[in-house]
Image 1 (cartoon, rainbow, N blue to C red):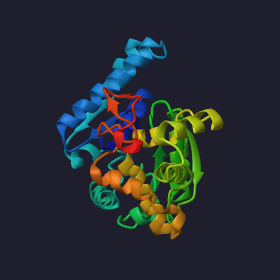
Image 2 (cartoon, rainbow, N blue to C red; image 1 turned 180 degrees about the vertical axis):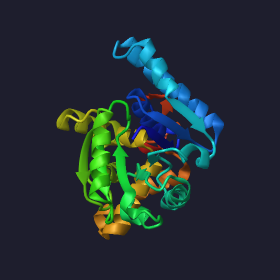
Image 3 (cartoon, rainbow, N blue to C red; image 1 turned 90 degrees about the horizontal axis):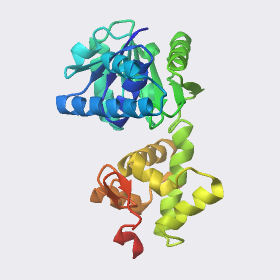
Length: 296
């Protein structure tokens, strides 16, 4: 397994491309927009520059990594020679299902189809293909080049051979693969997202302000960042979608997205990606002044 294709060049997609390319794999990075692909390559290059500056890699290593990545705007061209295809598109079930239908038709018969979904059923995704035994979840953590964990999720029909292959492949790029079962949210988001939602409820009910909530969790629970700041980094739309999946699949009121989260998403306040969420963001840094809405 030397040829990897990644569908989607956003934050997760370019991070996945980065780690595979840095570990000697031939990587096809696929997106519908050449501008998006060019932006992703610049991001990867900047991240590699930081590693060079910290003397973790050499300039030659950086150039070799970039040389291992080829960009494509046509899915057919990008996946035709891939041994493993990883879908890293937006966290939307309809979009992912359509991509997997197309991947199944265009990929080699023995290619493994993986998804970076953070909540959607692998069994549901696999069911739209003619190779459900070769469909698996690879849930990378953000930022991909730094975070070692990969949740490996087998669908109902995923073969043991495919699971073993993906575990070994994950190890080959320096990750720690953890197999989990195919239930809504898996492990990471089954635990993390309700915590973030509860922080939003705590804010909505006026128990404390944004910075106060985050400070309590950072200093009292030794979290590297507070849940509301983390939600801004993840994207409030992503948080909302995952909570919606948990609520619909598990049928428990405790997973219902808080109305404040729903309103923020509807208003387009999505966090870092939109410039404003629970915090105001300028030039990619957190403003110390919380948005006026949350001071009311």
